Image 1 (cartoon, rainbow, N blue to C red):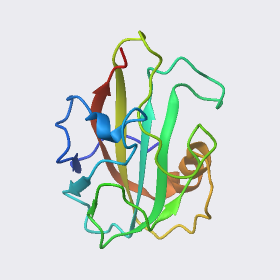
Image 2 (cartoon, rainbow, N blue to C red; image 1 turned 135 degrees about the vertical axis):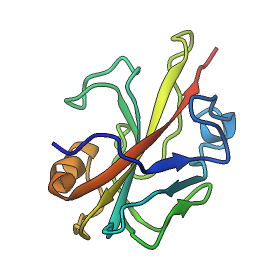
Image 3 (cartoon, one colour; image 1 turned 180 degrees about the vertical axis):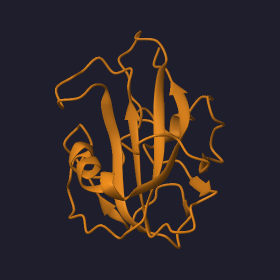
Image 4 (cartoon, rainbow, N blue to C red; image 1 turned 60 degrees about the vertical axis):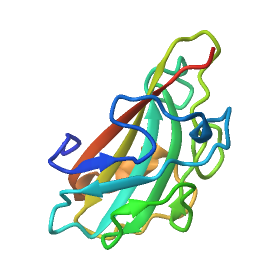
Amino acid sequence: MKFAPSPMTLTSAAFPDGGAIPARHTGEGQDVSPPLAWANVPGEARAFVLFCHDPDAPVVSSGGYGFVHWVVYNIPASVTSLPEGAAGYTPGLNDWGREGYGGPMPPVGHGPHRYYFWIVALDAEVPLERGLTLRQVLERIEPHVIGMNRLVGTYERR
């Protein structure tokens, strides 16, 4: 399986790797996706998939673990960043059952949660229809993954 970090990098002007996600990018704030940029992309990349997952969420109802906050795909290889509140690419379903970004909102008093933003490079434009779950996306792209990496942010509700 090719799902392992590579030399690609993913950064945000809103928070550093391992740092706190600003409230504006959470369910308690404006709930807009943070700006993201990626580099060190494999030369043979033809498309990207981006998703955000909270492995600290105490739920398993999705058939996995944690909570999926965002799934977006069919991002062309010519794109190496998304602005704050990004739209325009194909949205998948988050674990709220909605399309698009749904920011951090862990249970009050549950402590800090980690939010993994992943960028995945593909060697082909895999036609993915709107509204897929993360599991569906990962199953379909696995043979085409050529690079990936993550940016981790934290958030805690008090």
